[in-house]
Length: 173
Image (cartoon, rainbow, N blue to C red; front, side):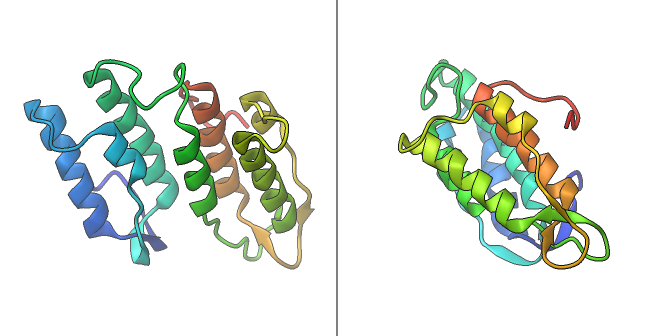
């Protein structure tokens, strides 16, 4: 699992490795040891010196798509979109690093936007499209509490990709 970077606080490495071993066994042998639904529902604890959550989440989106293709298409998906419940849980579990000694995105702006996305997915507000996610902008703070811009941008690229069911190549933001 050398391709996934480590972070000071990240996903539990042994739990991620166990899940990926099960996925590899399923994809390698064809024996169904894990399903796309099980991968979609997995939650990892945050640990000291763990795997970068955004990188793992990105990898799991790809794994889910590959497993769904093997399972016969669109099980667990709605017209190529990631299941809404899983997407809501994924958005709710994201944790961004603090912008230290650099400008960062205003935390309240980012949190409010993600809350709007979740409300749209739940049907209690107008839905947010992948285009809305790609075009969103946040105030920048130079002193005070802010989220690391690169982490937020990377997550938003993944979110837009999940909303439209296609993979975004590169940062694009």
